[in-house]
Structure formats: structure tokens, C-alpha cells
Length: 205
Image (cartoon, rainbow, N blue to C red):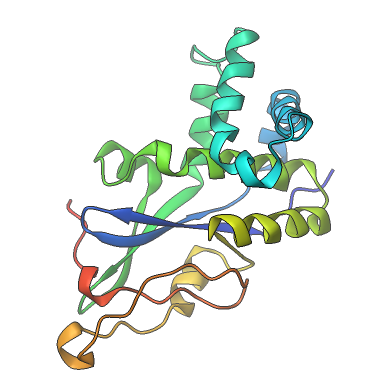
């Protein structure tokens, strides 16, 4: 078993303060070994029910929760919610543009706590990505996520968080550009999304 360590997920998100992206990395081999059974059951259920890449990224978190609750392993200090899900969230960061500064980041768990974004907006895609990247070979994971990206406007990148932020285009203020660029997530693993200068404002502390 080999975790697709270099394949990271980029999810475009919309907050009250503007457009941003969630950059998520795969779980470790150790975490997978601890939760392989519930992840495998979730992954299998998604595809055996015919949900696949069209609905899978939307309902993966709900499927994980249902299967875990049916097995009485969702709640508690060692439950799936407080171990696996928290680890998936810990491995993700919110990236957002700041006019005059470039880009800044905040850990996803902190962004959720401050209600900058809602877990429902990204939970399904994060869990689906976790299943795909941990269960499949790197080649299979990339192939599956390429299809997902085309349906869900997400993006996969081989770049870590710091490298991905450095690869983003330079921000242009609305005053200097005379126009507002539209923020969209590219399906290519190399093309980066363009920021929306109109919404490039500071995320609240």
C-alpha cells in the first residue's frame, strides 16, 4: 500500500470575505492503517451504490458518518469523528488573497472555528479525496481525481502548500487593472486559478 503523498487537493471556496481555496494533503500511512477498514467501506459503498465521481465528493462525509454510526465508532475520543476526520481537517489549510499583500493562509480547523467557511462546503470532497488517495495506487488516484476535478471544479497539484501559494499569479488591484478578474479553479494540475481582485480582502482574525 502506498499513499499518494504528492497528490494534493485544491478546493475552491467562497467566504463572506471573498474567494479562496482549501489546500489539502493526504493522510499518513499510519493514519490509514488505523482507519483502513472504515475508509474502505466508505469508498466501496460510494461506488457500489452507483454514486461514483458525480455524487461521491458531495456525500462521502455523510457516507462515512452513517457507516461509522452503524458500527458505533463515530463518537467518543477514539471515534472516527475525533480521530480520522480531525486529522483530515488538520492536514488542510485555507488560502485567501489579501490586496496589497498577496496570499495568506489559516489552518482549516481555525477557519471552521471562526466560521469563515462551513464544514459542509468541503467535508465531502475532503473525505472522498482521502478515500481515493489512500486506497488506490498513485496512478489510479490521479486518474480518478482528474475526472472529479472536471465535474467539481476542484484541482490536484503535486505542489505542497508553500509551493502552491508561490505559484499563484500576482494580485492586481481593481484600481490598477480597471477590471475584475473572475476566480475559477482550473482542472489542470499545472494551471493556477485566477484571483478575484474585488474580493481580495483580509480574512478576519
